[in-house]
Amino acid sequence: MPTDLPNERALREPGTMELDPSGDGLALDETRRLIASNKVEGTAVYDRKGEHLGSVYNFMVDKVTGQVAYAVLSFGGFLGFGEHHHPVPWKALTYDVRLGGYVIDIDPGTLAEAPRHGPDEDPFADPSYGGRLDDYYGGRAPTI
Image (cartoon, rainbow, N blue to C red; front, side, top):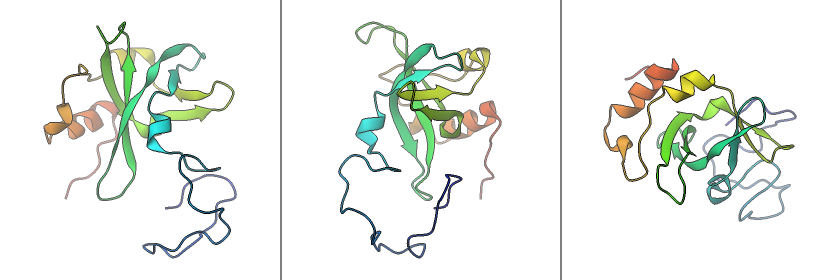
């Protein structure tokens, strides 16, 4: 799927499973452009000033498009107590190689008031939760 990364080119016809002929074989955890989910989970998250906020707990992938919709960020707490999770739009995160983590491009006040849940809760079990997140962040996708 095309992105806005520099020097991108189509490697195969969309929908095919053909491998990249210039590739070095099957990557297990990271290539120049791809990273395994287990390496993203736990990655530090910083604000625009470079101050550490928390980490990526996990992320939610759209089953139909295959695109990452939300990163669930973990903030606060000590040894798991008092921790809370904030799902934020994936597009709000940018990887910063200097920091070795993601920078979130959301106003701190907006993030503080955002929908959140505890580590033992599963709000995505509610089919309307994703829509409420989209409404909050202003990116409501059209529904069919």
